[in-house]
Length: 171
Image (cartoon, rainbow, N blue to C red; front, side, top):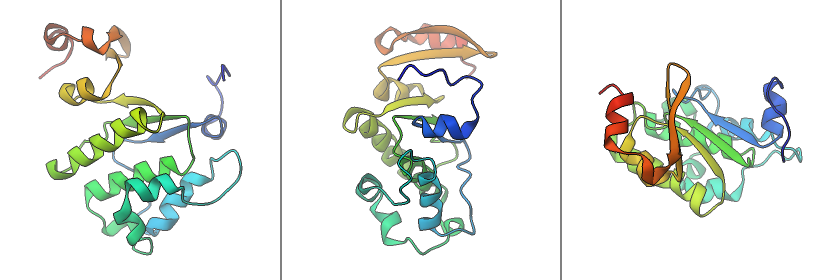
């Protein structure tokens, strides 16, 4: 919408359609799955407090267990819950900070597929902070590499060379 959001309070950014999934998930362990998801709906511009159908479609396990506490979920399930919470805001842009960090490999692929689907099928703009170059190459259209807070390389994902990765990323 070309609105300047720099310097705006976080609630205004959220109401403008930007959702954030933090590294480490940051769910509320004593809240139920339902309550955790509905926390995201407070950022909706239309004021509705509901679980969007997209959440049920992407995360049926969460819907089947709405009355369980979020704290009993595995790390991967908590990550799915954090993504569901962000989607409850019905955002235009979703920012995910290292969504696969600390997640068991069996769930990583599920989460990656959801993120790719959100962009390609749902049409959400996805901003991904990620160290897994293979996932970035599968998921992204464009990239920006940062080093010490500065963009050191950017472009179409096809331009992301192995040499560039080795030059700017510590392995």
